[in-house]
Length: 223
Image (cartoon, rainbow, N blue to C red; front, side, top):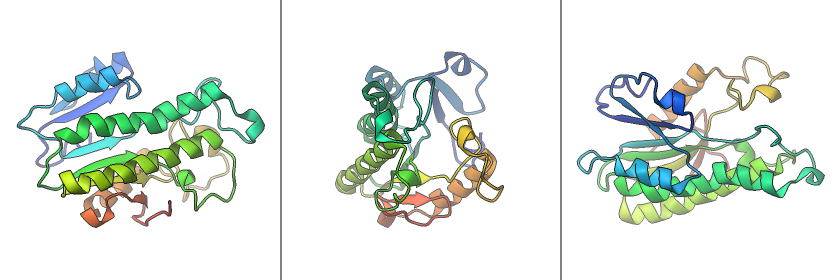
């Protein structure tokens, strides 16, 4: 809604796997599209909806998988399960690569634009001191590498495009809910507060920041 209400925004494409949500009443200037980022045909369809005379100024990927059904963050290597790992990697890493493939060609080459993906501090190899959460950590680290590598290529083809990963902090959503009982209010953000933080970070990013991972307060996080 914040994007739809922003000055100068004429078109907003939002996607979801939830067919009922996609068929519900959209916001002004919004078009809702049913898409699963792990299905390349869905992303091909999404890209085909983008008008040639209206390139994307912002791509924001908010998809992520930490737990769902039997998929849970592992506390030890003994809990690793190949199918669960594949599912987490499909959403947190491979789908991001497909978004780059299909959407960056529809972004402007000579004016400021942003391709941003919600990552996580736990995907930082240099910051990993607690261990655990094998699949989630590794998939977010893979996402970070995809973002970094895409930024190197984009610097040649889209010199004003900023490609970066963002860590929103711990946000009070279904993804984090099972893990927030011991967090104080200063460490657990509401979605509105998180949005305000990330909007500031997005506003301040420059091409020198492309390829980086940034926390909710704008501080860079080591890979």
